[in-house]
Length: 607
Image 1: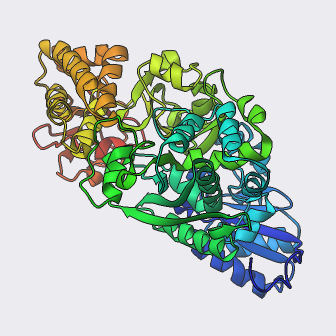
Image 2: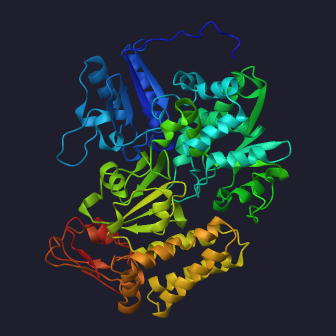
Image 3: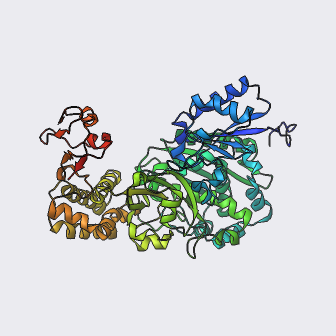
């Protein structure tokens, strides 16, 4: 504990708190500048003794940042700029009049929603992993402790044996949130039963899925929850040292991790004789270079040891022989963060949430063609429709929903006909997708599913470590075939060949990257075969995406001659006089789509 205990139990009371989101999303939109402006304005208004500004972690509603919650009123302000600060302080905090123009408006013509609790994005979630989001300063351990932080650690060290901890985690039904969904309690049990000393705990924070930011946001918002989960896991399996493997691209998360580790050591929660119970454990942060393959356990271990990150044959599993040949337990950020809540509230409580086989909640990053992008946490068994339409706000611009991909680049694309599918590990596998770490990408009618398969194959081809012939050559071969189809060079026999290649790569690859890499191909062939047929037989891209198979033209009746399209055309391929219909020169047109994006009258046609 800190040597100076004179201030323990003393708190300062404020009339109001301004909780400003300081996760990476809001920070990229100048949240720190807004925070500084708030502090200065509060000084000018002589409110320093009455109003406190708190920089919190990610609020989750990334599309609306920077975000401020005014407490205790619960008023939600969004998309704030430095120029808004004077108005907000003057009206809300001095005159007591909440500022409607800065509030959230769900859609054009709708009234603003003042309270965070009334916004559908928030009201339909259930928070366990994200329970502290937007409520505490992640750089202050006292604020974590004030919300029951490290209470679970104290409980296990003073009143539970390691075997009882493992039994509680097993009874909860918690499954690994980083991929395949293996039982967390069983995984811990295997590590505890493994012979030998010098066991290790690892937190896998190497999320490399395009569009995924769950782990980053959790660490930025609640780093002590991750540490507490690791401490409990270390006690359960008999480990005295752990590593947090995090990608270099997460500087803010790394900064807050280091601060949290230093604070935990200062408070006697890391190091020797923790809480005077004779338990020793410490942790280091290891920066990864951002290789997608390092999300696989044995590749991550190889990277930690300074070797080329390549998967190895299992068994032996890491629980038997992992880091430097010692028994090693690896869980991802979300899994570790669930642990304190289970210990505090009990396995029966946790297992009452979710479905029969998938207990608890799941955190998803919802991105793509959806109105409300951001981070959400929902009970297992929540339907895709609820996430996309109720929480996500549906598809912007009145466009039609087409598909959603779950599980990252090696997940499957799920069509509109399955929107009412309850999300859990088994149901996703049944329809050709995976849970993965929780990336969820929404696609609308202007998305070409063949091009989607090409994009993810290109990503996976680059990220494959190349150790397996089937993975290295198979993914490249699938990519080349799909690229040919997108370029108008597809042949009828390509569909059968793609199916065969995908099955071969899936069956013969060593690790999960190769084993799941065919999912984008298999799922799009399964649900969107008509688009492959159109590309191959009709030489057309129904979505108007694949450049080799489309041409641009202008509808003379809709064109108002505003000249915006010609001004945005990089090749000067559009001609016409003001207030007269314009024309596209097909020989000059490079099919970049700038004309279509700039046209306000939907006069640019794609055929």
